[in-house]
Amino acid sequence: MTEDNNRNVTEIPVTQAETAGTSPPPEKTREEQWAEELFKHKQEAQENYEKYLRALAEAENTRKRGIRDREEYLKYANVNMVKKILPIIDDLHRAIEAARSAQDIEAMAKGVEMTVAQLNEVLKGEGVTVIESVGKPFDPQYHEALTVEVSEEHPQNTVIEQFQTGYVMHDRVIRPSLVKVSS
Image (cartoon, one colour):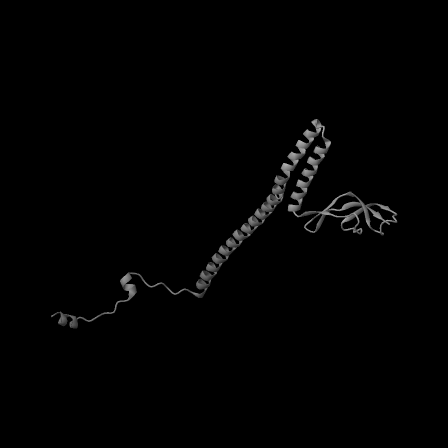
């Protein structure tokens, strides 16, 4: 029976608009489509500009942080070396106190020599070496001539006396030796 009822009913096509109770949206004009697309591009451009500004600010902050870190590093770069020198300074203070009350000058001189040797070891550990000058050919990169003396005993331009020791650190002259040169 239901089969018969279904055959007698004619189907009427129903549109989507009729079922929703509204009419379909009208087609957009070209101008409206372009305006919509332009609006989307403007939004995207604004978002990209904001991202650019954030990236620029972050780069500036990174640059400032790098400068601050470098200044901090330079400020405290020699802390380890200073820590190594402090016990030597303490030894020198003890030598001064001993010198005030000591009768044995030889023992005091030996103590100061030991302290100087200790200081030289610290400098050597930091890559500092002494410039050997006496008897060597004069080299303006390592020596500064204070006087020139005519000498029959030494070849010309030879360092015959050193007034002040020079030092090199990792192949860079920290202080040239002050010397007397033969002519």
